[in-house]
Image (cartoon, rainbow, N blue to C red; front, side, top):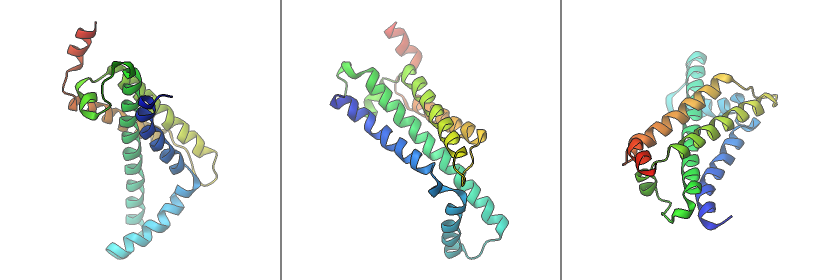
Length: 166
């Protein structure tokens, strides 16, 4: 693998490793609940079990949105760098945003959804975890949101870019 591709893929692969680690028993609800309860009671005093359960669930879902939106962005960067490796353009967000790519966005979105599905399937194999189709949908929505944010931040409209390439 040449340096350009390594530089393009390293952040995405490191983030993917974090997603895989998060999928282990170490991050089961019972374990995250224990340390979160200690932090919450230190900061806010005692919470009712119902309030704590709500906060815990919301934080876990926010974790999904955060992890998978970042994964989607990093996959876009990796695929953009792969698809344009021979162009000699620098791998910077400024360059990426000025040359937004529908192909890179689509492949990044597909890759993120496949990782989300594999993650939830993996969790069904662990006694302390459970997989959920709802979580795959949440992760997919986070990935779509990230790609739409990239598109809206791009400095070149995609329709114009496609006309010039075609």
